[in-house]
Image (tube, rainbow, N blue to C red; front, side, top):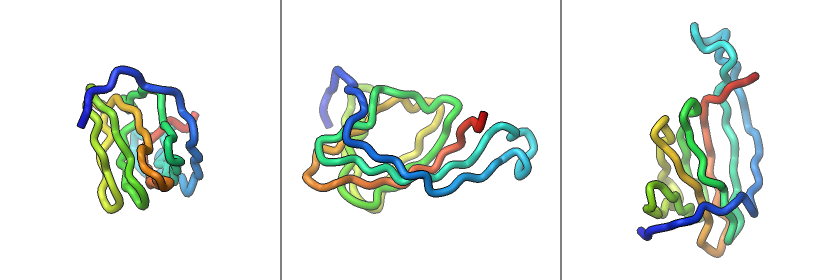
Length: 114
């Protein structure tokens, strides 16, 4: 873990939309929202930034390959394959791949569909 000052812009990231579900017909009060699943690949040296919040966009992440460094509150935490993290309304962070192989995550979140 290390202290970090800057949150760079996104570079070296590809995002593939895997599936969505319109939550309006599924759950009362969820009109205008969808459940979204994406595969995010961060190339070696890549950054998923800048600093962003998950307020009003909760989700979870699962790492399939490589290592992703999650920067929150000045602390950098490495996550490798088979683990992940929640992203709730208190999450403000940015991600990077400090490794030598592409890092691949599955990200599932609830977003506005408008």
